[in-house]
Length: 153
Length: 395
Image 1 (cartoon, rainbow over the protein chains, first blue to last red):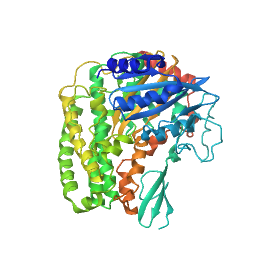
Image 2 (tube, rainbow over the protein chains, first blue to last red):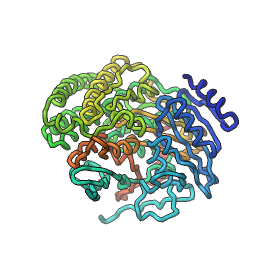
Image 3 (cartoon, each protein chain N blue to C red):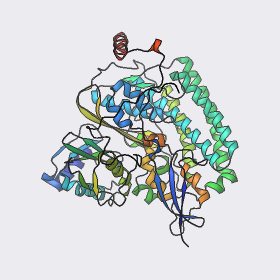
Image 4 (cartoon, each protein chain N blue to C red):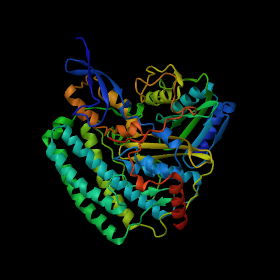
């Protein structure tokens, strides 16, 4: 199935729920959806097109909101994008549809503070245990200290 | 029987990487596992936001020492996409050659480590000696053994001369012959067979469901390879086979990796035979246009993903890296847990764990530290900038 056919089928099924869509390059499809239909769209892709693979989940701090991107697919990359409120970052988990997404959601939770509703084991994955609560390193307001050069060692 | 927890790692002689496995055991059997991969987190994604695109080549390379070429290739392909310019075909072929050399060295390294994990140290010594030949070759081509920074934005840094081409062909012949011997050892030696057959089983259905990648997935009989599914560099022109084996155990993973070495050797030969003429690099401006790009490459450990968002400045707005080891950790947890007829013993942990070819440097990612400088030679940032601009105009 070509990328265009795939996108048309998806548009037919979801109509106005797909806010924006594009094919910027070969093998890449971008879809922007509201956060309410994020899970629904992913479920549809996994079940109807038989694409059980998730490449990763990216979280981006867009200053007043956080963008979540689920990259799906083996040959064609389907980027499902959605935006959530930065003050109350919450979104449904997709681990019940794709079990392999578990660690990616934990990473986004850890580094950007996004709460994935219904995740079975939402806890830290990369930051140390004593990292202060409420400090999320990948948010833009977090400025890392420049490490001091080691001298006299 | 009551169960109790046995922590293994993060520093443990049997595990080559800093990982903490909290094993839930009942007697000799492992019934549950919890993994902590946080010991190597260096904040590289944040560090990349504070550096320009050229500096980030070197940072991306330092995500991992073993598959450094995969990271630089993925990074440079990704940034190339932002500019939307055609990269010279000769550069794309050279990228394939260096990537496949990197894969040979990585797979040989893994074979050695696997031999070490099951107590077969002779194999370890033999394989690593032949790996040295490949390392020397990488040094001849790029000028360095490990962190080579061979590929750069818009192409590659050095060309291959006829002398080097001759050396590559000669070394490939030797490595091919040696690998044939190792394959005959791996397929017949009782020490290897008893320690790898039906150990660390990952069924096809589980591998697909848990989104495993790379040799781990191919050893579970799934035909999947980014080079074939979504070709990058010159992979759409270079013929190769995707190796799969149906046994789903550690033995299957040994065979997949050994056979892949033969494929790599043939790909390198094909590239040398069909190397296009022309420039090896194009000049691109320091600031890429606004936009985003996503690239996947087949690293030695599996599918590696880089994603970049550019806001039109000289530094990336957001850079995301997803390494193959992180993708394979859910599959590892399944592999290490007994269920039904399938039992995992504590003694099987090291080889089952090593069979995913773990690389936690990749998984955690980087921040770097400035070490003491000699004042006589210190340049200020402005001086360095001036120098680089001058050199840039010259090239």
